[in-house]
Amino acid sequence: MLHAGLTPEAADDMYAHERDRIPTHRIAGTEEIAHWVLRMTDLAGRHATGQVVTVDGGLELV
Image (cartoon, rainbow, N blue to C red; front, side):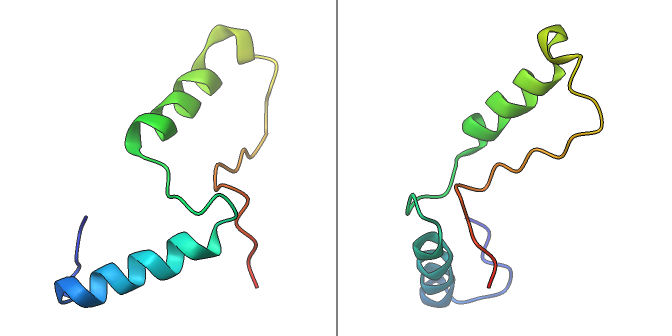
């Protein structure tokens, strides 16, 4: 995980806080996001135009 100048403890706290805000209580990995990218670029999805697909685990912004 990228610490962005934070101490490892602060980065872990930030990660846990963000993870706990997501209803699934987990953050998707790169392979899971890549799955959605591939699905949306497949020819089978060519009729979905002008859509915004949110892959966020059900995160509610407050």
